[in-house]
Length: 326
Length: 253
Image (tube, rainbow over all chains, first blue to last red; front, side, top):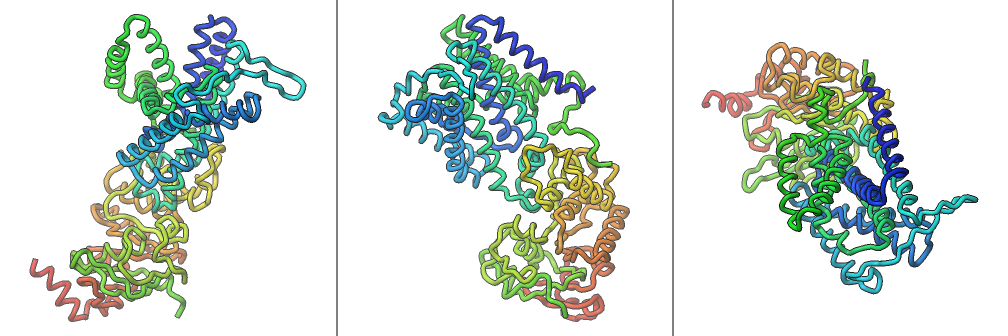
């Protein structure tokens, strides 16, 4: 039964997303894109937080890296969306290697504060380097050029067309994160979370593997940032702001740190809830805070985590297929 | 005489004014089981901590397999085959016993960094981890989370993790502490058997004299950071200096 659960869930998600893309209203399509972009951000981020046990408050810097990398590539080099996105991811990865190099030497609060400090540096760089980044205006007019692959050319100009590109990247991210969680590296990262003092005595370089998790999550943040740039047709310096770094933390917490689908479900709840509350009250942060409080305190292990244990499914932090050993 | 597997030269370490290693010159022969004993505060744990890379010596050199390793990071020493277990339970609590051992095995097989292939496809690592589990007598608990194991089983797992790294030289820090007699026998038999295979050299820090005398080919007695005796079981038992310093201390307590 469990063997088929995963492909089944994947197919259901895909079918649901395709239906939204075809039948959904403009608004639904837009909101769903925002959910998927945040989910990509959080899926990668949770490899660092839930899996490796490192709390970063600076991942907005890599989101912005992807965002500005894509936009700058668009303005100065080439307008091909896929190339722009690749450039965004590349810049995010370069940033996360540099920042990660300094941060992974430390743990817990020192790690968190260092990532916060680096994140604020990136924000102020973007804010002040007006000639390059557009300062507080951001970079505008980042249009969605058609994707030309050899003979075919796919238009992305309509949101409902761009939707399918975001969806494709979302499904790929979902698959990638799933594979990484099931890989040898995934187990090593769990080991770091469980006992970072013992892991070196197992022959694992703590710094290098922490850096690997940091850079992987930075790369996903960059992808999310690049996709967001094309969604909104502009970049904003606030995508690098530390308050934005809190989003993947909250989303992972809501969904469940120790679950694969947690960040996705968390993103859905976060975006939709915020959108709904904003309609009723200007004071959305207060109500949003209260609801988050209830979810985080009421659902131990997040929404997905508690659902899994409620339904009596195997609730282990590292779900693994049987049959490795006799 | 064969070349020693591990050698120290003038190894010195002080914590403040307390001297815990006073220029130690030691050489460990391959294949022999050596015990390091001494009263509390003699510098046994510090010695193992320095050799395994947990703390740096103030001065002196350490050579492993003829290579200078004094400043080498821990994981590189482990990759060379210099491993240790800990006095207190030091495992990966929320992982299964099997996964606990799979981590060092993957590292030893150089497959730990693979991120796009499934772990379930790592058959050689799985087989090696299963073999180690049965070696330490934990096959029945392979799928149990480490925290759910009894204290004795966690100590066995502790040693299993150390074995997973394919040690050429293995330091065991009080391997039988907190074990019941059955588990103790199991682990001592295990050590003798693995030692007899000839691939692993053991250095054991132990308080229990029965364990020390039944296992050791050679015994080193430390006191205030100095080697006061070094020899076979008979040498140590007949040494008046050891009696005076080591056993005398116990009588006073």
